[in-house]
Image 1 (tube, each protein chain N blue to C red):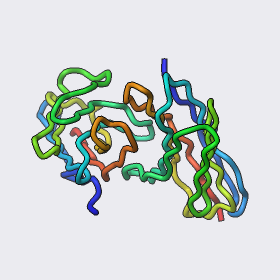
Image 2 (cartoon, one colour):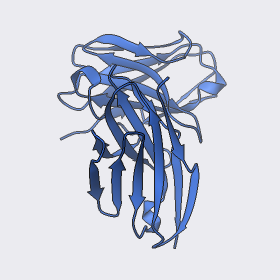
Image 3 (spheres, chains in turn purple, blue):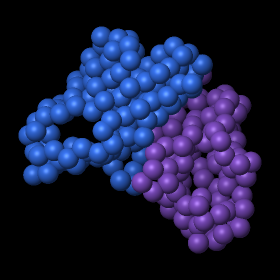
Image 4 (spheres, helix red, strand yellow):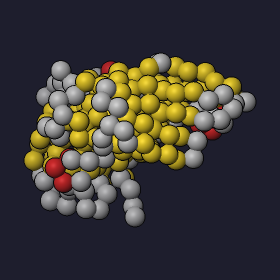
Length: 113
Length: 109
């Protein structure tokens, strides 16, 4: 069974531009979570989507946004990139309603130049 | 407020030297406690889910236990390949996850 997949694996963008990161959950999972992990730091919760709806949001500015598609895949958009947005962005998926274990993808390494 | 605290922040062991990692939690209704292993630059790898106090789970050299206030990840006779950051997380009754900041384990040969 395929795990959580993320693309691209690496992304380099100039400051001020927009970045789009993508995530495909495990088959049968409807909940998708996004986390930011800056170098050497812990996981910071960004967004939670379930059944196409945004269920919860972490303490990040509005330029961090996303959506979930009818097939439950998700994308994270980061607008007006700042240098401190450079981090590993992790996606995780879980069973409907987010009531059980989260399984993580390999991450996208975003570097803002 | 719900929170998870892991200790120690870092742990250095000699190969074969057994030890335990601690995860203390305060949560409004525990639905599950999760342990993950994370290698540098990679996504966390799922290890265990524990649902109720008294539950124990084992996998190779790792054993996770759960009480009403904390969980332990016991590492028996560790090898250098066990070196990683170990993360603990809890899921509360409102379906919200809280992650600890992790314990960075270094096992020297």
